[in-house]
Length: 388
Image (cartoon, one colour):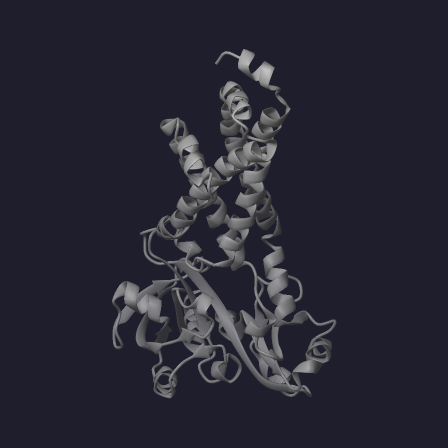
């Protein structure tokens, strides 16, 4: 600690260079933090999943629909406690690209029997069942758009571009998982959506669904029950693929594997950029202080003292950059979410700081190696002979 004052003065001897170095580190750390927080969106914990939750899609492609009649057949399978269905409707809302929220159609009579990760009041469930064109929205979407119960909203579909639906807001549906509470989503009645696409797109679509969700009992037999379900429709025109929700989620994430890998690689490269920025600064420091280090040696400073001074200066600059960069991560995430609404689920994760802290300590140590080696190896005579 006795060298702290000298370390701080040395660090700001060239104020502009030090400030620019700190800013460079901070911006890179902010970018690193944003990328790491985006990656957290693609992770999930087994504890967040519903035990025994199964997802059934068309075996050929998840984009193909399944017959509505499959649901009742699946309910007869031993081990299937409940069954429901859903449709993906779209994201875009109106012509404004800033208006962006997910819309789904769900089975109004059975969704709550399986989706225990959702919170809906009994009153809202009854209103949803009793309103032909009823819709539930997440609290965040309700707050964002200022919608209230009784409001009538016109929505469309990304898949069926000619489709136009008028829905009435009847209540809210919240997610229990904290990471999902900032999502903007709307859920409309499945039978209303099926009738609409049957009338406006194709009559046969009224008797189809996007996917089917099942609840296996007991949950430990989920894989076996999934196999039983798929065996029902084997060799038919509408074969199914039923997976436990964790396997289904992993398969969905695998679709973005290239993007995830690119983000991970870029985050590691950012650490390399931080290291290069700091090494460049400390290399200039080493060249400038050859003569000064020789003078310090004549005054009785030993190698360990010079190591402390150079390492301390490098670490001090790295820490300042880390503090500023960490402080910018949260505002950076807010800005990114405003510019790109599909990143609405991204939020600040404290685990990011667990990456930044050790990384900056390592960077500080590595960046100080050049000045430390030069300070220790240069003799007093050679150092005094050097002219800056």
